[in-house]
Length: 273
Image 1 (cartoon, rainbow, N blue to C red):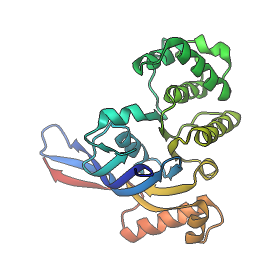
Image 2 (image 1 turned 90 degrees about the horizontal axis):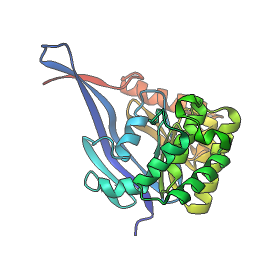
Image 3 (image 1 turned 45 degrees about the vertical axis):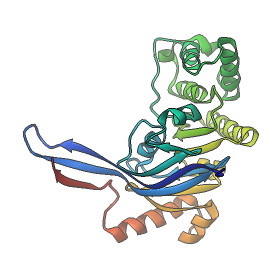
């Protein structure tokens, strides 16, 4: 049996948009281009990159929300495309723009999600309260409508929803965005404990260099839809001659993109319909 939780091979994904109402040309945006990496079972792997670098697109492909144009993906041995139903049972996903039924309470949203996964109501409620307490959310907020909760509290509910069924794979797309410093630390500690106790495989995208360095054994730098470097934090610093991970990203990303002449924007081309 493979010891890999996530395998990505030459993954590419493009989006197209028609230019004008009657024109026969369209703009093609290459969001991901030949991305390859591996994440071992029980490892936390970080992806660092600016807005528009392809991080969220990658998370959506791995969580079966988008179909790749080319390449191979395996999640705990299951292939995408082809075994999406099996992958969905293994994955918990947290998005920076998580969707809820805003008129319903945190409790109602979480119990609805638990119902979809076949969880017993009482067990789901106990588990939800345990996670929320560990994340530093007051219990009295549990029955408040989501629309009355702060952005940070809503994000804690999103994290709890992803963890209710204790999935072996977690895909976290900027999970601490909108959280105050204490809440951010609470989430980080919870994730560390989760991996240590359950061997959860975690893929984390972030803008936060300190968070990524704390949580991730290995880190990939992504820019312009390409994975331009990966390694441990110390390896990336040595490769760039930098003292900080922030400086390492600037040095490695800038050098790679300048060499290709592509600039720092996602690559666009024109194509016939």
